[in-house]
Image 1 (spheres, rainbow, N blue to C red):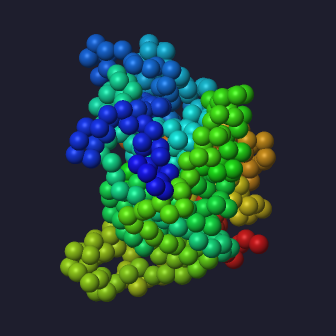
Image 2: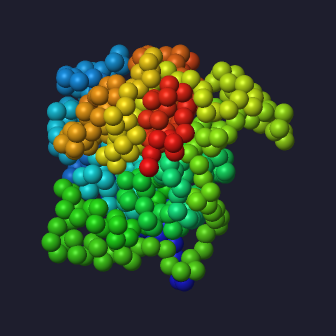
Length: 470
């Protein structure tokens, strides 16, 4: 292709092995990450087929999804009934094939999408796949990454390739300086509220604009994490000097002359001036307030001063029905202010918002205070490295002194996964999904930033953090 190209076009074309027709290409896959749920299935299927891994040095495995996060956990401890079997199967398969394996007691252990950039496994311009829909998270370091199923995982194990339909290109421009109390989670929730949960179908989405250019990598990872929540398979930020500084010296990042060559390549990847996008969206970050979801989809979101919508205000019967059902499930009334809704649990964790910067933000709100009576506070660091760094800074003491539980790292209660601990409760959470039963049977989840979750824990109700920070 001649003329200006987008970041996506450059990375896609660098990985095309063959044109399969019908807008489909066979792509080279640079990294495969497996976890004990879908990954153990892919390894079993490969063994049953009689095949061997094509490039085992490019395969990474981790125990993160069903492992219990309780302090002092055992190697196979899981609240899920099938969890121990999955863990043992993933461990056995990883050792059998000689994959790069991160076990429960490994100091590098953590949620796959947290440790992938932490270790430098995810790098700019690489293709990376994993059996988890939030693999798009690592687009925050400029990787082209997406979630796959276990059968596709088997295909990558056997061939290190995947056929993919080429999507259209979208650019989302986050412009302006975010106001006090507004964080990357608020920005992406506002975007989803604006374009809807289906707004990204069929697109590869580049996040750009002045707010992204000023944003540290960990914030970019949060933004990209939720691309799938508006149905975009791929979400990414083109690499820049912030990306390069973040990756330098990480375990699997290139070293020496290879590093210099990689940096030269990475600097060639950003979209060219004049490159064409089929769709563009702009979000004014300066005009945003802290965001909180009220219903059962990330698109059902309002500013902290907002109210639950009235179904009668919807233009069509289908939307009215969705609003009515969501409000009924959430046990909220039309016109009710979101601020002041009482909560049972404040949850900080997940691949969306459990990095060190997230914990620092929440600890800044909590320091010297206690959470409201009757509220359960739960903090699950995104990786063992994050946990240890937080402890070195004394953040764990801030959380504990405030009344929060301090856990080992893992996916934990982001999803239900057989853990009924949060059943039939109202939770304000830093996670990424709030559909019915996501965090437990009949559990009502409100998505928000770490700062808003911390402020709400202190008040015992959904609260505006802006009155608690300088």
